[in-house]
Structure formats: structure tokens, C-alpha cells
Image (cartoon, rainbow, N blue to C red; front, side, top):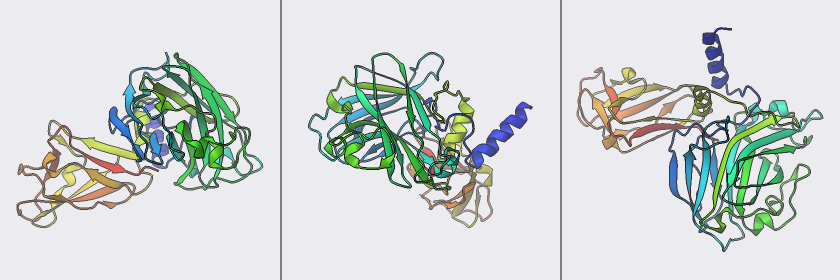
Length: 366
């Protein structure tokens, strides 16, 4: 098969949301970080996607602990060259009962149908990953079925050297995953929790209806000391009871998979936005620009952008006064930009981002 045909096939697979190959995890090697490569002072009560793509940091209540989250150049030989690093910057040694901190990846139900969950032909799932820390800690790896409220957690232990953890979860013949583009499965690294989640008996042998107290019993707290660090990379979720070698993907392949959920156009050096040639004055003060997304997005995305002062309307060298709410589909989005100066209807224009910190983003995350 020609290289051109291979690339065309990949584009089709990403556009329709298909997950091909062994690994169902997207960006398991932590190579793609469209939003930022580091965030400081993260914590409190807000969950968010912050740095490496497809990895969400979930906090369900206000807590004292804070951390720095980074994409760093550190991984076991032959993996990806990158890892996700967490550094505790403010300790939390008085843990509230409702506190919980997890690192999550969420999966569309339509990508999980080959697991056969909820059928007599259900298959086991194996999750593997590389991890190290500043000391020995016990943390949890949980699979949570969001469609049916079922879960199972297995513990793992860190050392100061990179180790590959391999955890096999049994088949579950109860509760099928919905066959759609919504979230059905959570893969959760549990690294901090209060007694609401640790006060019971760990459910580690078989899938069962979720009981919060049993979900993270036995884990240590990442926030126990400001000396604490945690590194994770090479995360793989695959069907079967055997962990296979980590599946390597090119950066372009991984980026395209991530862009189904989120992508952004950054500024600096008068960087032109995509599809700027489609921009024109549809009346004397309104400019319509159509942006073709790199791949079909999971859902109609939400538009985000920086201050108007970071943009220019070219060739008039004026900052717009407003961006209207975007409209569109999973394939393209439209932005209506307000010009501060009236122009002739039908004039062509281009939208540029002049500030290195400026950006436009589209978000269709789970």
C-alpha cells in the first residue's frame, strides 16, 4: 500500500472517530500538548484539561493541595520521550472526607463496542503504563462504566525508577456501553482521596455497582508532602488478558486523534488563522470567516479565544471589537467578527493573531 493511501486511510479513521490498532488510549505517550506544556498552582475544586491532550484532572471538592503539572522530556528508553509530571507544591495533610483527585481519560462508547461489555462474549481489558515517583507510593487505577454505574479498581506501587505496571480487569457481562459519541468509560488514576472514597473495602476482583467508599481504599495521598513527584507515560488500554508492547504512533497520527476533541491556532509572527481566505465583509461591519477543522470533531465544538487586542483585521491593521458566538458543524465553524470601521460589503479580509499569547480554540472534549 502506498504512503499516500495509508495517510488517507488514517484521515478517514480519525474523522469517523474510529480507534485503530492495539491501544485504545489517545496520547498515552504524552507527546501532544496543545494547550500548554506546564501549569502551576493547580488545585482547588475545579476539574480541567490543562496540559497534555486527552488527560483530564478531576477534583470534586475544594482542597488545600496544589501542584505543578508538566509535560517533560523523560520516559523509559524506547517509549515516547515524553511523560506527564506532577509536583506537589502545597501539601494537604488534613484530608476532607469528600476530597478526590484523579487523572482521567474518557472514552466514546462507539469506540468500545469490540470489548463486548454487557454481553455473554465480554472480554477482559488490560491496562499497562510506565510510572515512577520520588518514593514508594500506592495508588489506584480504576475503570468506571459511566453508562451503568459499575467499576473496578486495582492498586499499584511506585518506585524511584521507571517500572511498567500491567493490570488485567476481568470481563463484565453486565451493562453494555452505549454505542454513541458520548462518554462511556473512565480510566482513572486515583492519587488522593478522603474517607468517602477510601473508607470501605477495595473492589478489585470483579466489576460491581459503584460504592464510593470502595473505589480508592488503600491509596496513599499525592499531597502528603511537597517533596512528592509522579511521572506517568506509555499508557495503554487493550482487549485481552495480556499486555503487549506499547504501541508507538507518529506525532501527526496522535495529534489528529487529539484534534477530534480539541484544537487551537496559536499567534505570534502575524500567524494567519486557517481559512482566512474565506473571510469577507458580509455587511459593512461584520466579517464572516469559515474555519475547516483539521478532522471531524466529536461534536459541534465550543469556541474560545483571547482578548480582541491579540487579533488584527488585515489589510486594515485594526483589532476587531467583537467575536460573535460560533455556529457550524463537526466539520467546520463560522466566526462573525465585528469591524470597528465600516467597510464596503463584499471586501475580502484576513484575521491574524499578532500576539504570541493569542489563540483561537475549539473544544469538543468529553
